[in-house]
Length: 549
Image 1 (cartoon, rainbow, N blue to C red):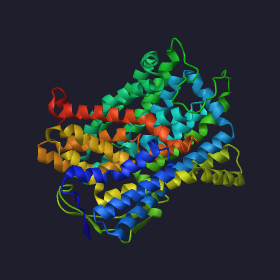
Image 2: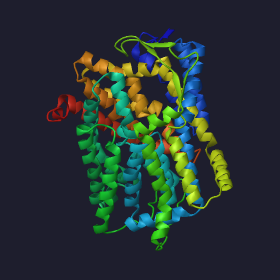
Image 3: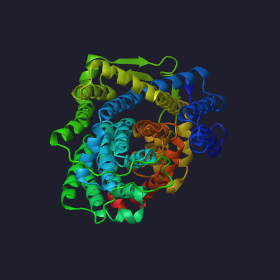
Image 4: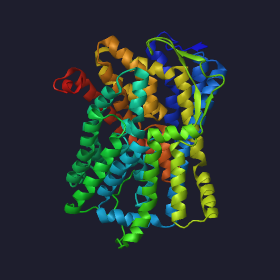
């Protein structure tokens, strides 16, 4: 068994700088040198393995198996979700249903800002709450492309919108995982995350439209933005504080969609924005606005049916009882040879030495991607495809996402190598040495964790124990800081390489990940800083301390 070392240089800040080399390699290759994502991910993986083995002394076999384990996790469940969401998109797009979909949303509002608000924020939150793991970005980015948004706008804006709902994604999985690794009360954590994110659930819709068209044009449609945000934030607060984490996003998203649609029946902008704004950041042209035709009710129903089917199956597959029943039929839990129980975490990352397990959960039946696959098959048959046509379209989709699957596997391999090597903990410990300012910097640990792993759940598993231990050492409330890990983490979701690749694939803009990263990077950092300031206020500043137990 190999025990992790967190400060190989005897200086936590030097060690953290070296531990961050894979991040600099990965993000620098994508964002600065415009290297294609799958090549950049491979370079980042080589850097991560080099640092783990040469600097941290991780045995070669353990490091190699950690990379293989991460790559497999990248394919199932994450790659399996993306593949099948895009399969459904291809089926609908081939039949021309997106043109009808565009016109039906135009019937709600022909204003581009409000279309974006409805799809990226309100509808995206539903898919985040039901499935998570890249599903909302894949679905909403594909929908926005179908509505005439540019690839950069569709990708970047979908990523910005997919923030506030992330902490309660996949029926509360991140918070449930956080409670499991910290030993803190699940309902207390759920309530605290809800209190921290409620103001940002109101802010993010405004931020989204501001990022799209600027401040002045955002103010022109402030009433429906406020309706969408408040209709989401209020249920989010109430359910997270008085029920638990499971249905927070699902109920809040339905509330937001319903209230926004009803409000737009009685309110119209004085100057509707029916064309896309000209922007030097958009590297590809978009189709000009066309006069909206009138579709029959049957045609509109047909266009929306595949996405309704998808929502139903995603929700069903997200119900814990359904997952358990499907796992009862067939699941393979395979210990990863050469890695399982071969790595030991030690204090101060954990309160007592802890042996890390490595068991690959081959749960094909209960995987969310399987529910999406079934929804796509049913939708394809509904749209008139033959069995041969479905097979051919699936083959075309596989060819479309081949590089994306490679990229995601490498990204997850990087995350798993850093996790089992302890280099991620080194970076977290460096931030943990900030003393009285820890409520602010501890929030950024969660942001860093999601940026590294691509998952709020993984970040909570990674740093949840560290947050509790550090908070107790500094005399802070452990519930506050554990929740801050999840709340701060949601703002890192838009810059993690996995999400960026999902967005570029959904918009068929693969190879432009650097442009997407540059588009969202400022927004991610700025929002993470705001969350950190809010948590700092909860810790020390009245009356925000009233929002902390």
